[in-house]
Image (cartoon, rainbow, N blue to C red):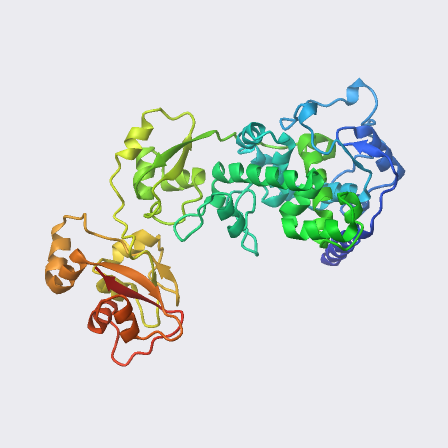
Length: 476
């Protein structure tokens, strides 16, 4: 297939997806999400659009193949994703052609990528289903992560959404997730799933419809509430025929239904060579002080990458220094006495008063290490730096060495006795320069002196403070 043909196929695909909002239901009846007969009739009646464009995969309507809806021989082995009928979501939906269009899209145009998502789904499905079951939600909602993140806890969007459930920062914090420079619990597969369940439950209670709840999950409660008020109906399938919501939201529920149908019976849609990942069953232990990730992984007899595969929420070299309780995910098969081993790990030595330093013009690792009385090696280890090159305004965590007893450390403190005496009795605060700030005003506000601020930050004479810069303020 030539490059020109590929481009034309992609253009036709984009055109078909753009026309989705104008699609109307072909019949007033309903079709069961689990009944293959109506889908087979539709495929026999009209050859799917995308199967004509992306013909690398044999369509299910091949006349040489046995009919999918007749005879006991057509019954395939149950999918590993199959759920009891009572847990089915959207068992009755309008026969909307956009659903079939998305099925064709996943089956033909995005076959390779969708296959990866299906294979990866089994890592988290047991945990997600159990959580949703505990919250009284339909277990089929677990497949929402399929179209949100492809079941990747490390997924990020351009808009800033993160994790399995693509929480925005504000929504994540609202539902109990910590998101800061040290940790992003939107990426925690256990905590984020619990928050997603609570959020979906709230949306369903607000709108009384799972279709509208999912639309609100995509667009936000306010936009969907406005759409209901503007259209005068609480029927999502009627609202999506208007322009009261965005095109993405109009197509969100059909896209979810298409993905759910494929996931529950992948062989029917051409996904016959799936190599599912092994399920990851986790339990949580609570830490009450900051601990280095390296020490945590050693206590669990893991490498750091393996530990982070269970705990992608940790994005720095240690757990957050200011959180009183931090959950750590460990495999459920680990011995019960692991909690005592984790609690006995010494504190990380992170200085909570100086969490970060922002790189300025002219800085180098050596200059920063000398300024904060540490070493280049410690700086690189604390920030997981692979090279010594720094970017302007890059943030670096400054490790504290109060607990080190090496002779080299004491010699360095001896050479900086005056500074060390200040550090032993004082802490540092990170201050961001605002309009109107000056060294005199900062010294007066924090009850320190201009000379101490200059000495702590190694500020050159006649330096101008720029709005947005960060400087360290000595405080008692």
